[in-house]
Image 1 (cartoon, rainbow, N blue to C red):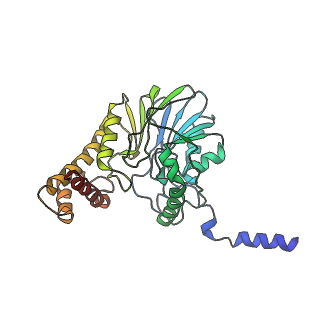
Image 2 (cartoon, helix red, strand yellow):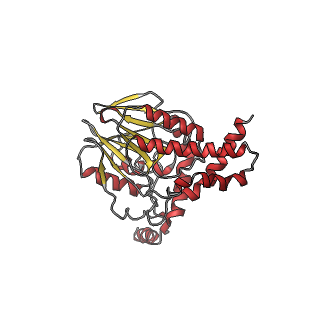
Image 3 (cartoon, one colour):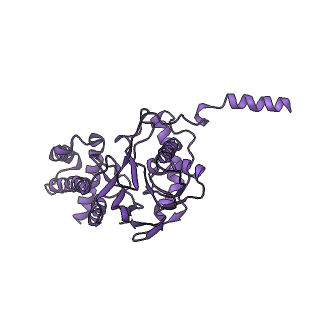
Length: 315
């Protein structure tokens, strides 16, 4: 018995670092009060890296009469624990529900921390997101650990367990959460959540603020259409997936950015220019956006996606 115990203790001591839980999130990320009941933490507006420990989205939460409703808790168990600590500074109420806006792990892998603390909380997402989360979760954890030198170690995928669809309205703690799903946009499973009483919309990555979005799983015209749907909502506060929250102007700015990428590519495509020839011309046409986060990294891909749209529309 003693020998077995010693072996177990030895195994724990030599446990590879990759299997140990990574340290907590460092740095101070202020809790921003948007309305009387809506709060958000604005993560760094950049790609995941060692310095930000994979934290880059905008976790938010809403206070209701029966508990807290969280939207997009973040990229890791560490981010989720930070979020829970922030919530505890405002209320002692339990987390009763979580919304995941889409399948990209930087927005939902922190479900892990919330589920460990509040296992009865229902986690909502679109069915297409739920269907893909089983594959995407482990892939995102692997990628995030690679990009951050293991900063999300210890995170386990906790998948949404209840699907929501376009025009669903959920009553949670006496407040109304209206769901918008417009089809293929940033992904095929995006939802935007309107908190009706607070005149607030959580946009997910259908809108990013002063950031060039990645559309590897999406569609530029579809994303523009989602922005137009968001602009029809009678709200005052808009929370993007990345970048600072604001008013309708952040939705307009992102829609116009995508529209100008598409228009520039179509203009040059109509002159029989190749995709390689078009890229520097698009960069010149969009010079006003050069200061946006990730512009240099993403404009080439966005040009390629828009080129495919131009080819499709030509036939």
